[in-house]
Length: 639
Image 1 (cartoon, one colour):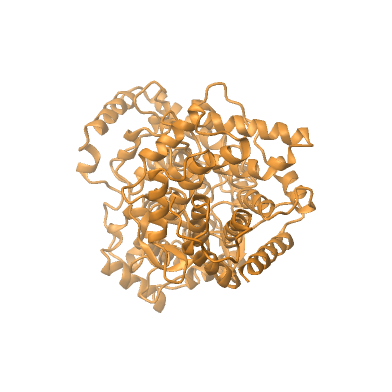
Image 2: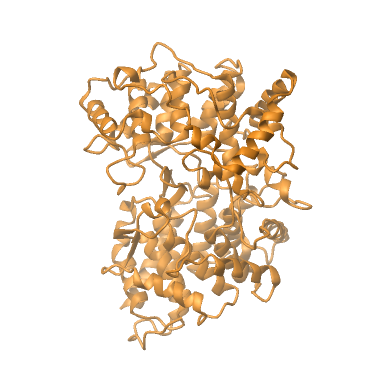
């Protein structure tokens, strides 16, 4: 019976995905987050006096529908009580839209939540504080820990601007400009939060101990004191450098690095430099932001970026794992699309790579500057079977493979976007989330998934020195309970799945203690219904927190890892497979975010994931245990 159910599930998922493919060969699912990007879009449109009422009203509606009964907004469903920063952003945007008024019950309800949680002065999100200050809700502080001249500090310095991660840099450059200009812009529609709350004049000021307490941070202050004491001519050079940094990284659609959040801060920064609101970079940026809107669950959402390349690569690979021929028109079309999105120019990633050669892929379909390791391995998996008869694909594959290998960190692991951006000094910034956002270190999920690609698609094993080094890195970073922390997914289930499947793919013995311990940890957290579920709370408390309900996505990750570990299926695997089979009818209802961005602040729901990961897990289950599916479990086999 289970053999037939697995086959039916594979056919159902495969046929549904084939129908959902776009004409250009891609898959275009929503990449959904909380209300931040919707709120910032309303704020931006109203600031620029762009009266796109259909869009503003639609965004107002989505934000309103996300409010909790206690008046708060959350960044993930089971967040305790609510999120103060998200709630303030939502309130400000709703008021700025003019479709809500201060006296409205839902605004008063939010006011009560904010006041009972310490008021606006307790906001700990830098981006929330910056956007409020730009809109006149507060004065700029007398001290900002990142002076603009940091952009001029040479690379030989112990600290320089390019020590920050790429995603931090594209947000910090406009923020540093705004702080330098002490920029504030208001108009007749700008809400006055002071009518609702007592505003703290030190909203953006940082505690003295946060600024000066650390000896390493003192070293940075000394460097900056020397730079900032130089003539005004150098200061003007820093202004120009920050401006050019942004302009050089604008994508064809007008967005900065393809991120809506960075683009919005860039718009405000360009206004601070005297750009007219109709100036081409600002006008194109607005159009780029509008192009990121997605109709989802009866509302319109502004995605922080599109996930088209990522979704397309993962789906194409998953379909092939489910035995859809590489000659099938669906796979051929997706291959052509992915080939068209391979990067062919050097970006910031190349600064720390010896003899850099482009060849990676980015996350979104408009991304041409910022390739990443995960998207590149995903794309290479998808086109791997297409390169045998076709030299074009073979050349693309070889370039991508070379790029992946060149991105390995000295410690043996792989980062997400850029190597050698793991300077611990950068994590000392007195902002919430600095430790996670400021650097791009090796992570278990990226390292594991890269190993899984290299083992399965290239035949490399731990006998190769650089592979052995990566395996050693994973062993050294295993948690005491046997799990691994995953940076870009939720979270310990995600990291453990990636680490286990990666190490096994490069030939690690299934009986080794680190493999066995990881598999045993996954088995120990299985829910009574046969599934797995982990809370986003794990991401910021840095220990496993159960969700107390199962999700298709996390169940698929866990089952897939155990399938890789166990040569003979056991009851844990069978119960997990049965959970997937029994709940596939709910895949469009799976709304829990399993993508991680910034701990405690930004999480994402990939609408493609309930299709992709169950399809992969069921395919791997069928291919590994095909001869024994439907037979009684022989015995519980430990790794």
